[in-house]
Length: 193
Image (tube, rainbow, N blue to C red):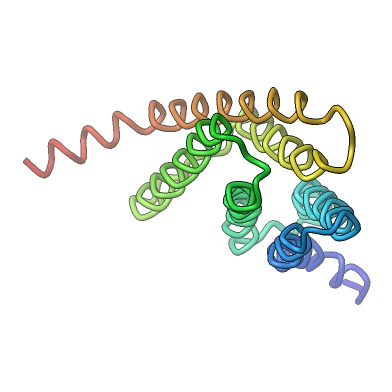
């Protein structure tokens, strides 16, 4: 294996680390309150969101899918989405009705993370469904539109629709995950009786 291939094999995890490292910078730019800083936040956010596609693609291409990559990739997505939803509550981007889909998204992500951890302890892998991948994409696009709202005229209506669509997909895929493991959970519950 050449040095170039070795570096490329590590690139997917470095992209994931970069996505996590970008979160506080994006937050600081948004909270800075200046349109130029918000533009920087949007550009950095788009770059971070795009790494969500490329880290998985490159890991498969170079055969470098790793346990830490499988663990960190969904965590990075959840950190990015969750942190920015909270910032939008603080900086005035969200109106009162936006709190409903934001809460649905946050609760589902915490629930599924806990479910995955429990099932992992049981040595059962809960695979990511294709619909869940689409859900993540819709979430990431919705958040990008929310960052762009003060910068680009006409994005408010689009971001509202995407946020509610993301919440619906988020709730539905959470229900799918729960249904997929409910028989195992019921069996474990009956063992404890």
